[in-house]
Structure formats: C-alpha cells, structure tokens
Amino acid sequence: MIATPPVPSVVRWIPWGTATEPPAAPGLTALTCAALFGVDAYRVGLHCSAVRMPSRTTRDLLNQRLSKVDLGALRRTLITRRAHRTNDRGRLVQRALHLVAWGDACVDALPSAAAAAAITDQQIVEHAHDVTELIHTEAHPGEWLDALAWRGGLYYGARDLQRLAIGVQLPWPDGIGGAESALIAATYLGRVGAPGSLVQTLAHRKVPYYAAAAMPVQEHGTACLSIGLSTVADHVVTLLEAVRDELRHIRDFGIPDTRVPYLRASATLYEAIHPSEDSFQDWAEEPAGPVGLSAPAVAVVGRLPEATVTQLREAVREW
Image 1 (tube, rainbow, N blue to C red):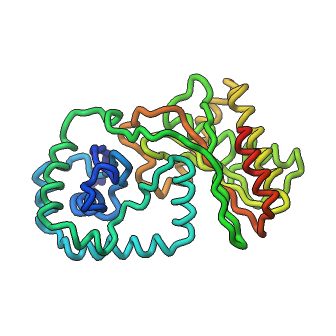
Image 2 (image 1 turned 135 degrees about the horizontal axis):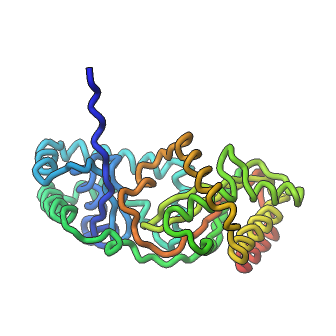
Image 3 (image 1 turned 90 degrees about the vertical axis):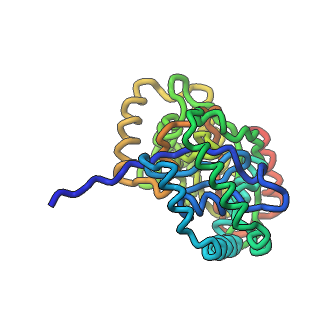
C-alpha cells in the first residue's frame, strides 16, 4: 500500500475584519470564514483576516463546502466558543495583552448570540461568494495587512496570581528580516527548554524567577516576540529591568554575526522538535510587515502594592 502525502496548505488574506463589518452584523466575517474553511482554519483581524486552506482548493470546492454547511449549527458552535473564551482566564489575559500592544480588541471576533441571530443566511452566503473571488486574485498579501500602530503600555491584573503585559518596540538586528528575525531573536533570548541570554542575565544579576522564555509569534502579519516571565511580587520590578536591559543590548549592539548561523540552525532544530500548535505561524507566503515588536507577559505570584505598580509604569516609559 502506498500512502498518499497530504495536500500542502496555504495561508491567504482577505480584506475584511471586525472594523469592516456592517454595524448591525458583528461576527459576520467569523461566520463566513468558518462556513468556508472550518472553525479552526481562520483568524479574524481588524481590517483583514487570514484563512488557511489546502493549496489545491478551487472555487467549486469552496462552493460545494458552503452548500453542505449547517449554518444553524455553525452559529451555535461559534456562540459556544465565545462563551468559553469570555470565561477563560488565559483568554482574558490574551485579550488584555492584545489591547495593550495594538489598541484593538479584534481577538473578540466571534459573534454573540444576539449578533448571530441577527445575521441572515443570505448575508453569510453572499459574503462567502465574495471571499471565494478574493482569495483567488493575484493580490500580494502585504496589500491587505492591518496597519495597526504599536502602542505599548502596561496591563495589570489585580488578583492573587498577577498578570502583567508590557509593550515595547524591539528593532531586529541588521541583515535579519521578517519572520526569521523573530526566530533568531527568540533563540538568542532563549526558548522553553532551551535557555539563552535572558536566563544568563537573570542568573548573573541573581534575580529570582520561575520562568523566562521567548516565543516568536505573528500578529496582524507582523513578526513579533512574546516573552513569558514569572516571579514573586517582591522581584517583579527587578525582573523587568533585567529584561529591559537585555532588549536594549540587542537594540544597541545587535546579535554577533558569528552567532547568527548557529542560532538559525538551533531555531530550525527547535521548530522541528517543538512544532508550533498555531497553524498560522507557518506562513505559506511571508507577509510584508514592519519590524518586529515584543510584548513581554509576566505572571507574578502575590499581590503587588500600588508603589510597585507605579515603579513598573516608570520602567515601561524608559523602554
């Protein structure tokens, strides 16, 4: 028996998102993309959305899929997902981090029960036919990226297990661009299970921490870093100052050229051993976006006094 290899998938962009939907139909883009591509094969943005599909997909195949979808069941599925996300603490932290970084809440793209009931089947079908035409055009994906400005800032969650989100701009080293720059920088700083310069800096300064690792991500077509950190409340300012200084070092001096080939090989090996669970991280066509950005997310054990929060705000301004 000869196994048939799976058909490779591609990521395509469509120029619709939460900001381009009719005011009376929030969630229309999510419903349409779910109907055409499946509930896990799309990501709605502010002005544009990404969809993943088999590379051999044709208009006829999409129309056939659309004709077989139970739109009532689809509505119920997305409404249930929205309810789960609004009650999931991790999702709430993700939403807060996104608001801090981009000043936008497009992660809340799923329709509410009232919104889903107000959208007619005909609206979904008409929207879907427009999408099938757009994804088969020759437009470069870079033409439809969300032009969101990086705002940065500080998000603070007042609970026993604190969550902080710090937004800072991080120019990548010269000669490394796009999605690869996020991989190289994350490998240099250190990934989960593969420590790098960040852990070395914390050890040198004797800063207590539970976790410190970087991960490359894609947000609105832009290569970014997400830096996960955790410590106790007494050391959170010291931890963030150490991270700030490490990022400044990359900004001012870059990554040594002699290390880039090694880091590139290490990143490739890490991705092979720890493949991303996010199917949208492996772009078929790398979008043309601005320089990478970094948003450290910090988990803090213990309650932060107001004086510490003030210190954190001051530290962020200095980044």
